[in-house]
Amino acid sequence: MARRKIDLSVSREASVVNAAWGVPIEKTPLPLICERIRFYREKSGLEQKAFARRLGITPNAASNWECGRSRPDVNLLPAICRALGITLYDLYGDPLTERERKLLDGYRALSPGNRYAVDRTVETLGFVQRVGSRPELRELLYFERSLAAGFGDPTEFEQEAVPIYLYASPEVERADYVFRVNGDSMEPDFRSGDLVLVRKLSPASTLHHGEIGAFIVGNETYIKEYREDGLHSLNKAYGVLRFDEEQAVYCIGRVLGIVSPDALADEEAVRDFLTIRSAAR
Image (cartoon, rainbow, N blue to C red; front, top):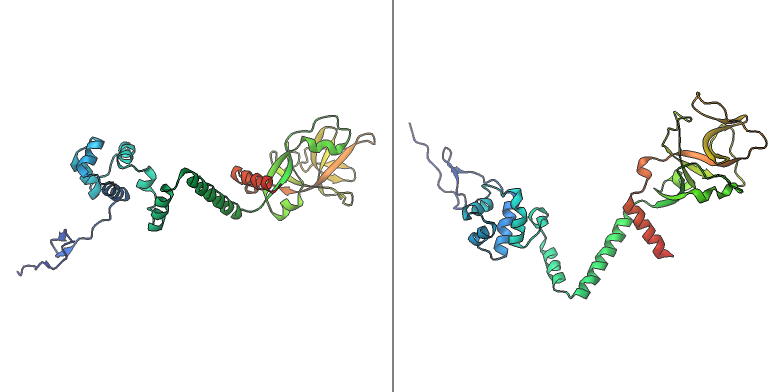
């Protein structure tokens, strides 16, 4: 039986050869952390033995890390970073491009005053970019609880409101107020805890029979369906609210719909919105 000939014409870089077929075995890429440890050790001019001594490990262990035969224990990562003068981000984050390295070296060469100027410029540009990528915000008046008693003028109810910030949409643009639904009298359309958008009635607008409105009766607020004989609940378990001529019933406005959870602006968006508004004044 003829012996299989092994092709020895492979490059010197291919140090491992499949003995059965005589072809080089493709090397497995080194784990990122192994590459980074070797890169930053060599960049700092630190010999492998000296690096191992700083960590209290054997040179063989350090060599195994850099060759990818093993990886450092997670408990050693802070010590590795201190020994190499780097951060955990340097070990695991995206590597810097040559342009980024030049910018970083240039920044480090600046005086403290010039560094401060660069910091503020970067913060401003980041702020403008962040704000520009978001939808616009709108500030409405929000009523979470029942109103305080004793209003001589029903329009004073706005004093009980706090600001709420929503991402702009056609429905939000039309609204003036946000009310929280309390109780189950308007189920199934409006559940307890829902936030509803309300458009304030103007002198020229009227709430028509069959429409849902927000009302003040005494010191209580209601979300009800307006009909000729009184204020109706959608939940049939509740009766009709009827009032005599001596009771003042004030219609705040027309209910436009429920506020969707993703319409509520997050804290960062609100801070940016208030910063821009303050600067514009």
